[in-house]
Image (cartoon, rainbow, N blue to C red; front, top):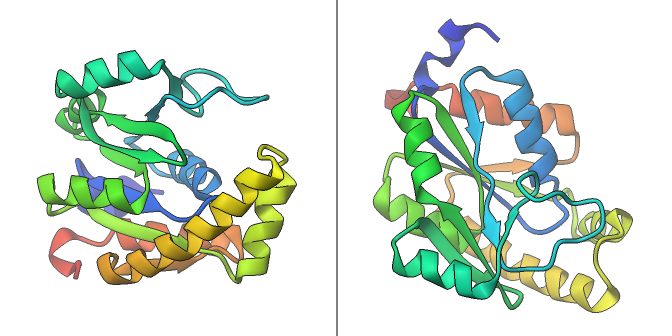
Length: 197
């Protein structure tokens, strides 16, 4: 994509949210691949690393004591407890990328997005929806990362998160076809700021 079509997105915060299994990570990786000057923020978490994950790629994995130390030091832009684990966005890395004129992609939940939106009212919030609930269940099961109890918790949480998103997000994108969803998101984030809702 040429730089001229991306002029509206320099130095902005773009928040991608959605329920577990909807394809947020895949979408974010596609956006980084297709767009210039984009930084994908890697969240910090206290949850255990799962098979196939790598520290610094999916998440930065830390202990609860270290996470709480960073909270007290004001090191997070946002943080939340999800399914008994803490997740947060490192403030210094985001501010550094913004300072370099990069657009920053945050893959965070609705609760975290609201915290960031209070600090950065101009942040663009995009919520990814599954084509239908049964597809979400299939995607979570197909990844093979969660046991049955975790899958049930994630599916129950999905309904709550989707309901909250309808209240707080202006941009909703259905991820039925990955390429189409990515194109829709690119159209949203490359709109000049004055043309945003």
